[in-house]
Image (cartoon, rainbow over all chains, first blue to last red; front, top):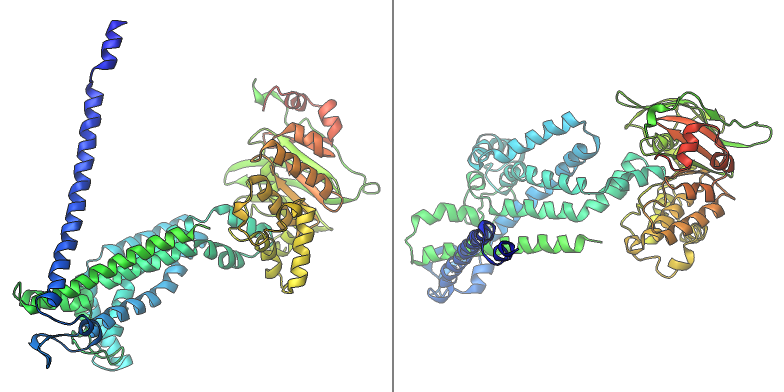
Length: 305
Length: 269
C-alpha cells in the first residue's frame, strides 16, 4: 500500500515527458509568433519611414501615378505615386481569378461528381504537378508562349496585364480547384440522395443543391487564389513589361507591387528614400494578405448556416 | 447462435389475388449485386395499395438494398436484375425516365436530411424545379404537406427559418413533408425513426398511419415493436433472402418458419 502511496506522490518518466512536450511546443509557438511580429514590425517601420522621415504624402502614395522616389516634386516631397502598381496588382489578380474560377469549379465538379476513381486520381496528380512547378518556369513559359500569343492575337507588345493574368490563371488554377474540390466533397452525400429521391436530375442536384451548399467553401477558394495571385512576383514580372506607368489597358506594359519590388530592391541602398518607398509597397502587400486572410475567416464563419 | 443454420430457400411468401387487392408495386425475381457481392436474391414481393408494409431483418439482410432498388436509388451503386412492376410498367428497365418515376415513388431516409435552406424552401425546391412558380400555389402545397406530416402546427410561424434549427424528429417529418409535396403514389422509408428519440418516433409513426389513407408505404425498420405497431404486412429478410411475408399479426404471432420465429422472439438479430 505504501509503495502505491509513494508512487502517486512522486514524479515519474511520464510526468517529465509531459513537461518536456509542453516546453517544446510552447517554444515552437513563441518562436513563430516572434518571427511574424518581427517581420510585421520591420516592414511597417521601414514602410512608414517613407512618410515620416522622407515626408512623402500618404495621399500621393495611393492617389498619384508618378513613381520616381529619388526625384522630388514641386512641393519638395518625393514622388511616390504607387497607384499604377496597386491597380496593376488588382488587375492581374482579379482577371486571373475571373478566368480560373469557372474552370476550377468545372474541374472540381467533374472530380467529385462524375469521374471514376481512376480519373479522379489522374486529375489529382495533374493538379499536384501544377502546384509543384516553380514560378520561374511559369514565367519562362509565359515569356516564350503567352507573350507572343497575346502580341499576335490581341495586339500591343504582348507584355501587360493580360499576359500577366493568363500566367497567373494557370498558377492559381490548382489552388482554387483543389480547395473547391474539398468544399464540394464536404457537402454531405445525403443532400444528393435527398435531391435525387425527389426526382431531381443530376444537373439540378449539382446546380441547385451541391453548389449552393458548397458556396462558402468555393468563395474561400477564390479568395485563396486571389491571395496567391496578388503575392506572385517572379512569373508576373517576366511578362508584365515592368513600366511603372498607369496601365492604359490590358495590353500596355505595366507593373505590379511585387514586380516593382523584385526589380528595384537590389538597386537601392538601405535607408534611402528609394529603398523606403519600396518598403512601403511591401507594407501594402503585407496588409493586403492580412485582409485576404481576414476575408477567408469571415466567409468561413458566415458560411455556417 | 449460428445464423447460417436455416434453409434460406424454405420460404413462406404471401401473394395477393389481384381481384381482391389492389397492388401498388411489385417485384419479380429481383436480385442485387454490389460488384461480385450478391446482396439480394430472388425477391418476388407484392405490395398492396394504401397499406403499410414493413421490411424487417438483421443488419445486412438486404432489406435496405431491396428498398433502395424500388425507386432506382441503386443506379450507379449496384446492379439490379429482375422486374419492378408499377402501373403495368417494368420501372427497372433502362428506358424508364428515373427522374419522372422518382416523383411517384418518393423516399425518406434513415438520417433526417433536410437541405440547409429554410423550411419553406426545403419543400418548394422540387416543386419549383418542376415549374410550379405561383406563390399562392406553393404556399398551399407547403401548408398541405406540412399538415400531412403533422408538422404544420409546430412550424407555421417559422417557415423561413433554417430547417437545420429543427429537432431531429421535426427534421424527419419535414423530410416526409418534402416527399409528399410531390404527391407520390408510394413512399419508401428507410428506417425513418432509427435516429430519433422515442417521442419523435411516436410522432413519425402516427404520421405514417395518417399517411396511409393516401399513400402506399413501404418501411424498413430494425424496430420490431414499430413494425408490429404500424404495419399491415411484414416481410422478414434474412441474409439476402425474403423468408416470410404475410400479415403483420401472423408474422409476429404465428410465424411459419423457424428463422422468422427466432428473429421475432429475439433469439438473434
